Length: 182
Image 1 (cartoon, one colour):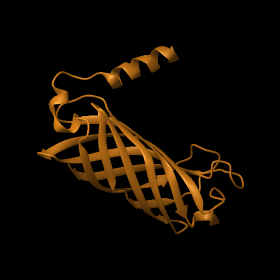
Image 2 (tube, one colour):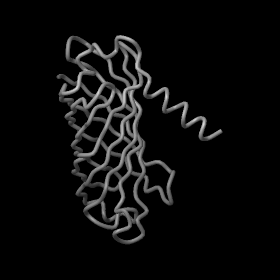
Image 3 (cartoon, helix red, strand yellow):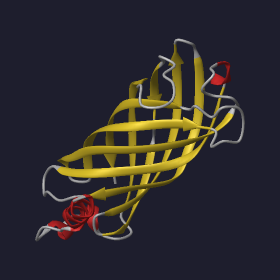
């Protein structure tokens, strides 16, 4: 059952409706900039839950590699509350996989990178330099030619990948809203 579900999900992700490739967004080489930001809170899906909240500024640059597949680099400047702290990071390994649509374009996003933070006073973050991983589901829609809005919900993970201490990490739910142009 699990393999069938995974295969079905993959087929749906890669399906391309007729005419969708005619949009400039899906032409290989198309580039865009997005000003985005949002906020989130820690969630109890790991070995601990430090009860933190944060606001983030997440500018993005994207380049279409092939129809429905976009390479994305994202910056991350976040202010944490309870306890206070900051995170500055870059996710140079990121992708958006568009799943269909012609006006409203749903997508899955994946990203990975590095960060510097002063949240090491938390048991979950044992060092200043950490890894960032994120998985999101979103939708974007045009407001005029080459301008669009996006909204995305994501799971955001901070971890030292076992390089120091207990490596409990922080798992957070995050909402991102952005305006882009290409």
